[in-house]
Image 1 (cartoon, rainbow, N blue to C red):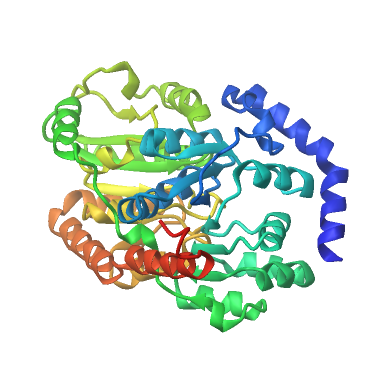
Image 2: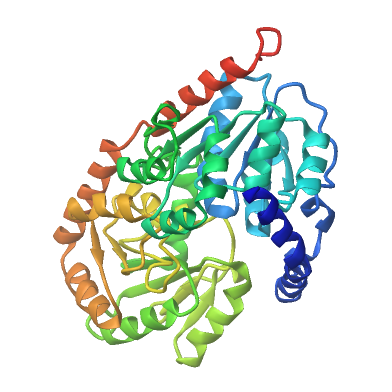
Length: 430
């Protein structure tokens, strides 16, 4: 009954959803293509052992890649269809997995569109990355005896309160899920409070702690060091959102006189903001170059804007201090484990509700500092910029957290293997 009213409401507001898609396509041309896929009209996938992996956008896709690769290595007979909801997620699937998987945009969560997609793909299992709970997708998979697993799950207190407000709909979803694998105990308890059976709940940890560095890291690192020039103290501002660059630039301009050799590398989260971020820097009369233009930073260069996708890890490798975005504005914070893997001291703002538990583990070890605005940022950058020993100490603490929490990927793979065995006959197992 709850799902019926949810679907009815979704159908009623669907014209607004389409208008929003048109609006996004005007602002971001990448949204203009492949609309039929969003209605479940994807290319048929004729595979016997197909796993559907849903990763909403770029961050979830990057998290899913090591998991998919590990399963591909272990079970060459498995095939994968990876769905995303954003063009940036689609780009990451193509760049990181190429033709080894099928890719399509996820269908809107309406019964006819979900059924259309399932008819064309017939997956053996659905793996949801992070917290992507869609009532009709889960119901229609359950109706076809397709087990649904949520892996690398996270649930903030705010999200838990939201799900609790629609308890009937939430309980219906949770009752139809085969298993939920969470990043932390506290997040698992939130799912349990929503009615998920403890027998179908586990805490293998975050798969993002098991980071595989790219094979060409050393070569790219050398190239980028030549690009930025010698003796530069690099502050990288990763995955920034609108409103954060202003705060960062305020702090950077105040600290620059005492740290004249500092270079600020800004990596906007979304490609449609590359131009506006560059313009913002130029309006402040800062000396800016864009990475895509291929230029080399002079000693007078203040800012390097990374206007490309998929290169963040390489830029972390040449940095001394990392600010992780989505945290000075109420976005919820982004993945700080990539910065930690390079032993960098980490700075974040107060808005970390998407990564709260993991961020707290870095704070507890002294690897992450919180700032609430440009004033705090000036103070922190002053301390870190002047003292290499402090930077190295925080970096060692970051690596300690990474080592302590490693292994989540293997535990998650083992969980998926178990459900593959339960859901497949011996003739179908790859």
